[in-house]
Picture 1 (cartoon, rainbow, N blue to C red):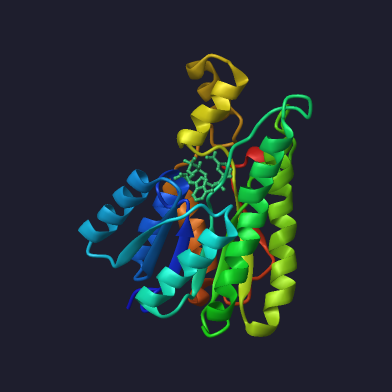
Picture 2 (cartoon, rainbow, N blue to C red):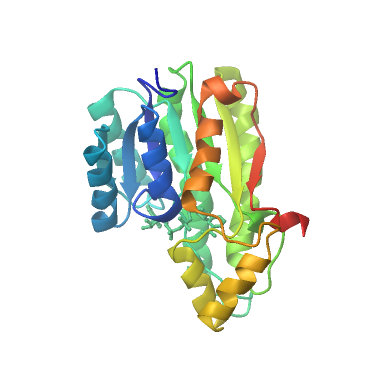
Length: 256
Ligand SMILES: NC(=O)c1ccc[n+]([C@@H]2O[C@H](COP(=O)([O-])OP(=O)(O)OC[C@H]3O[C@@H](n4cnc5c(N)ncnc54)[C@H](O)[C@@H]3O)[C@@H](O)[C@H]2O)c1
């Protein structure tokens, strides 16, 4: 019997990187997956991978920063699978810079995706999570929720907010038995790594090496390593008495 047999999980930003690995990991553990992504091609790719592994999934092309699209996404998910047990808030916008660099529009957009989008997904899923006795929400925060890198103001600010959103939802959802936790990845090798390097304007190989050296384990993490931590917090059997918590998966970066 697989850990998540019979459960339905929504994974936002499932098209690539950490979200793709989470969708595959939860599917391998028996969950039916609602792959959500703003990018149709990458979302469909993840759906195809799940299908090839004999998993059950649908893809919903949705922008989590748009409340009407989040509502519609939940409607499609529940008309297909009838229930929602697990919500993984993973999709994010990577807006970097100092306060002098970032425009009003960029600020509003990054807050709409990384903070309000997470809250809206939780809000729309709530009636269904209440009906599950194995429900869980896992929010992707970051080591940027805890440590402030230079010229990273919008991203850092939103990821700090994700931690407090996690604790606040844990408080409010506890009466319904819904656990809400966060995972804080360190430097994980995905397309976001290259967005980060492009922003810094530094040499790619040299910067990759700096990222590796910044962790105690002297390497970047793999998306699959974050997905295992998310599975732990999503699985009632594994983490039934854990809520409002923040699991750091950074190879010791925050201890160096
Ligand atoms: N990669 C890292 O080093 C790292 C470190 C710490 C935290 N994180 C967090 O992990 C999560 C995943 O990061 P990643 O590196 O896999 O990113 P990624 O850019 O590789 O993938 C993000 C996915 O989200 C989708 N997406 C973006 N905006 C969306 C929207 N508005 N609606 C729906 N889908 C949208 C993208 O199309 C993409 O498929 C993010 O929350 C990120 O902040 C990543």
